[in-house]
Image (tube, rainbow, N blue to C red):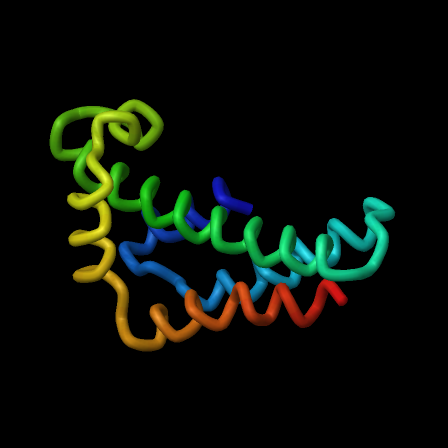
Length: 114
């Protein structure tokens, strides 16, 4: 999911925050299909996985844009990026709708993984 979302964002030049909602549903669904017992551990793991996916995508998209200017692939530029720099550029790149979707995605995953 991270690779597909990052690739789409880098190819189109937009953040596509709505995909975070799909990532939350996917995390919940995969934990259900994997046979994890229902309850709070599954719900919290789905929310944490969704949050991790969103952070990784933001990191790779920013790394892709900055790395391209230096002739680096996103995976080559990612370890060179600092957290504050990524945070600043991600805040500038995301629209209010993207931020809303990114904020609602872990909540959706928490609810869907019950």
